[in-house]
Length: 465
Ligand SMILES: OC[C@H]1NNC[C@@H](O)[C@@H]1O
Image 1 (spheres, rainbow, N blue to C red):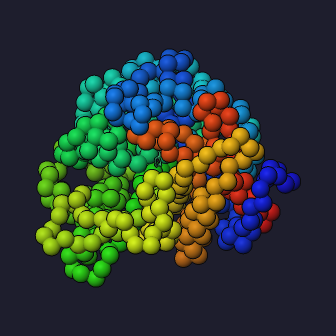
Image 2: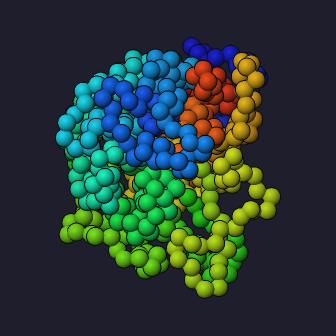
Image 3: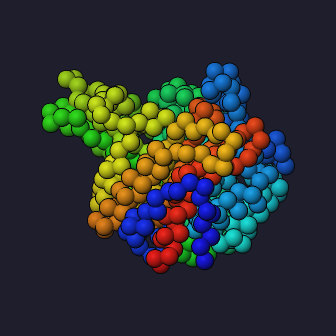
């Protein structure tokens, strides 16, 4: 049955592209709790570091906060109907720790569990597989007051929280992701302070990263103990392919450094049980406070790796060796195209990183758990929003996924970021990633041209399989 909404605009139906994906490939969209839910003071939810950070003057664009966001907390029916209209087979969302355990540890908030219970049941009723992320950056504020991810105890609190959620939802959630992009939590949040909690201490980033990884490793067995055998468990990492701008030896050296900083810092401990050789020296920092057995815990076997990718980094080597996090990126890149975030559009980077990660690490299966683009979408009150650049971005990155599949990469699914426009962290609501537009003054949802294009692609895929 063709459920695709009749697009008010004619989008080219990419039937050839749809044909390049294997049967049972999962097509989804992704969001995160603080970015879409709103209702931050409702039903017993506690405060998070993003409530505190966004309330701090000067931290977020024009003082935007997640207080209302896209009001998803009150619109589950409407938003899951949207997912059906788009033809999604899966939906990746995150669970707000402060809704479940408001203090971070201790008392459980039943209303918080009830909300996600309803969301999961609604998704299943509508034939959509729930992919749940346990931590997408909204750490309960009381834990941050006790040191946050600088405090080893937070790793244990995360494992306790994980068990609480898995005990309630484990029988119905299709796949579990422990952390979203711990690199961002550690480096942006504790290293350079552009994300919550806004700390600026590079050694702190190293220490926080270790405790995030430890929390991940502690959570895996706690999850597996609560969910049906065989339920896939994984982690989502931002993976940023690094390329050299020339053939000089110092460029090759700096590409290696930048890859360690961007990617191997997390991939290596998870999949090799050790940090990259020489990484802490290359950061001119001390190793984190690793305790006996930590790396065994962190490298707990996983069923899949979630890859988030948006762009790439192009490096030109310096004469003297830079620190791993200060390699010189080429910007702007001649003749390159950029999204509204200032990120270069480079779809080959996704193909290359998928091929390289599958070759270099025992990842089992891979999902692209986020890929998408921000563009300055405007709505004139009409039936839709023309966003041809986002259509072109998605078509080119999905072509890269198809090329990776044809090279044997075990790619099992793709989640577009994002289902709908939402709170884009320090950029607030100024950046729109959705394939569905949100008019924040009325909370009206308007499917963009890219949404109709995606729905047509999924429909063509379903017609092939
Ligand atoms: O910047 C776009 C997205 N990147 N990954 C994490 C998400 O929370 C962001 O909105």
